[in-house]
Length: 108
Length: 116
Image (cartoon, rainbow over all chains, first blue to last red; front, side, top):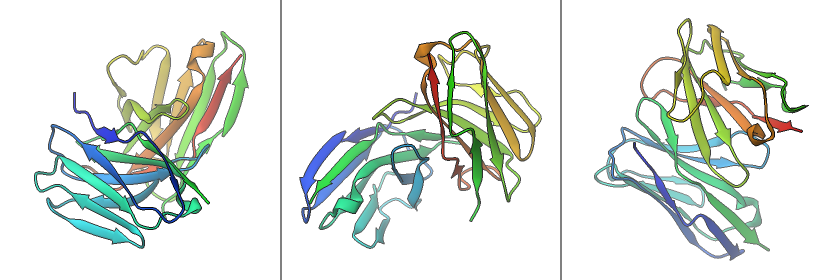
């Protein structure tokens, strides 16, 4: 069974702080995605990383795919209350498998 | 962008009854649809994969006789929770894609099922 270990599972920080969420696996994925989900809604795709070592930026969010394509990280710079939500990494193996998720709370 | 519509968004049913949830792709033909289940503050757990015109493939531990999946057309898949019990209360989310491999998945907005 391919598992994605996501950490931390819960994170509560003050506005303006930086944070990093990690997604690790013992398996190699053809691609890895990061999603954000609001309560009562479906997940919304933030980014897809495909190439080992790839780095993508989306405003204050920086996503990195590990060289071996087994792990990824999401770094948020100067977090804002609007960043509050559930962040999910997901790996493609023909089907999409999700990590446990990171619940982020950014307090003003 | 592509839209996946899920209906109903919320449903309350009595224990022992069955509930059907629909997942429609509105502007593309979905060759594959996936059904997920999500408990509060937890991640999405894949329940089954359905391909149009064939039987669904269920993940380990998911009862296929309890969670009936039908993917009768390229734009519609249904999940029926049969003889629902309170422990089936959860957030059910479908996703759909066109093509094979790692083509983009489009998610519905989920269905909150409460079994009383």
